[in-house]
Image 1 (cartoon, rainbow, N blue to C red):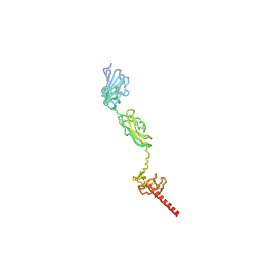
Image 2 (image 1 turned 90 degrees about the vertical axis):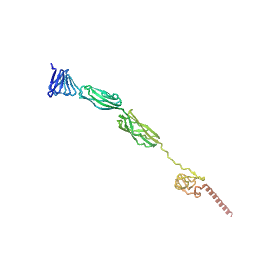
Image 3 (image 1 turned 30 degrees about the horizontal axis):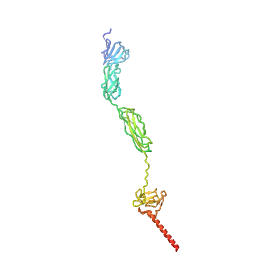
Image 4 (image 1 turned 180 degrees about the vertical axis):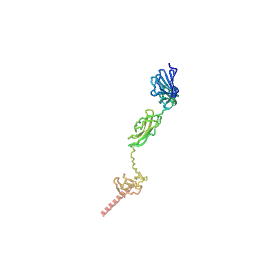
Length: 388
């Protein structure tokens, strides 16, 4: 029969070794197997903290029971047999020490064990403020704004690790640097140059912008980028369409990211009807205030005295030239000019043109009477001569 306590192997320093007490064996110190060792069915072998069991090449460790490697103990080499090897967890850590989440967001934490081949890696998860963040199976979900601490605890040994979680409100917003105004032009215009609009993601969420559409009166260029991280910018161009009729055009260009946020950018443009050529009418003849004679008033200086030249009627006062109208019928006009002929008749010597007070009708009557009197006198003298 086996003694109640049997030392199977001594330590490398001559002390300790492997001691079996019934079916439970314990490794003391640093032990290297020189002879084969078998852990039978129903037996256990424990390697506690500070102890090492080394199985060199050529040596044999057959395990048909259970070998337990406690925290701080070491098993070097690979046992054979159909038993189990249990490694105690000596520590645990998380892949992230802090998390920043937005309301409704989530992220999964990963626990890492020491040693990596620890047999029992079962853990429990908890949150000190479930109203801020909850955790299940390592997945942290944001519930409300604030701060919370996520705690992971190993079932084997009660080792813990923590992660601080900050939850803030998710915001979706964009802004534009300009609202294009293309001013005012006349019909038949040349298109104004396109203007560039810059869009900025002013929220804390990544946006997936959609290409803005052209409107009835304005053409929109291609958006420079569609995924837009917080703080990033994108650009596109805007230009009025050609051939717009007279009117005022005020429209809006929509920029959105599939429902989270939409920005309306006003654009404006004005088209006026081209003005008709302005024709200045010739000034109307004005009567002199002191008589019944009609004068032609100079449109440049307001005076009434004119002289016919080869180029037209020239104002005696300021030199203004009238070449398209016939002024010979007006008072204070010397000579006759035929528009288009380029020649002027000499000034009539029988009608005095000495000032604004002359009356050409009166002078004409007087000249006719004088002519008739002279003709009568000549006829009388001829008759008297024939009688004699």
